[in-house]
Length: 329
Figure 1 (spheres, rainbow, N blue to C red):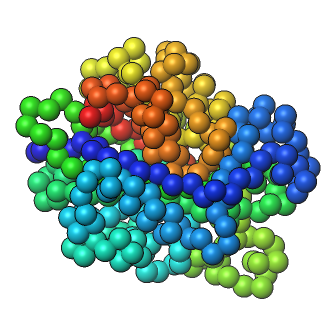
Figure 2 (cartoon, rainbow, N blue to C red):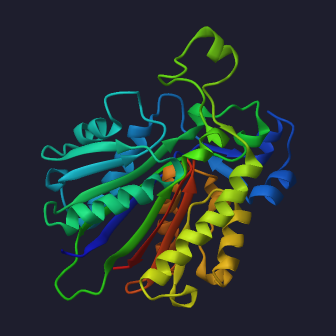
């Protein structure tokens, strides 16, 4: 097995910004209420006509340019998203065509907020198995398209964006790359965070549209309790499995859903504030895009450097949960 490493990253967020004050004009809420409960101050919103594939392509182009390779060298494209351009074909097909990645195969991966880590785990094994040289892992979601802006419990949380990791093999002797993962699902949590209609069980109808069932629905307390417990559990177990503890981690880069979830997880792992990246105040919850966006900010601010042990962790609808451990290179 070869060791996979992250060799480049790219991100894109649309220029339009929706602040807490803007939301207070749409639903009964205010900046203080949102910040105290979530830590979010603003989020980026895609303009009319911009789809998930558009943001994914822009982020992928940044990653490829930084690495100095052409799209024609890409072997596979994994798009983690819950907001595909359409039911089919897969958004990965649209991205492949727009990029000009002629020899790449690919697929969409639906695991909500854990999707990017599941894609990253998959890419590490495709590269590690020696069958793929370059794999693009894309987390992209246009959450504003499936958010009910009459529901203050959900509309304050989400934003739009895309992020990409380019995964390839580490050089011989290079101490960088994938160490291990622990991914889980618990389908008993499905009713607590979902979009009820639009699938085969409740296809679109006048009734489902009138009842606003094509939007995200969430039971916040249930999701919060699960997220705090499970993010800590998978992180702790993964670290122990590979002989590490929280003190060995240079940086925890968690899914950016709620500041209280992140801080509670960090405290349970014994991490100091400087060991944790939180940037949801600027972006909100961009679902599959939060981890690459947070990684980009960590690199740009000098908090993540070559050789650092970095722990990625997420919990999402499904329920899904995961943690992936890497030596940054």
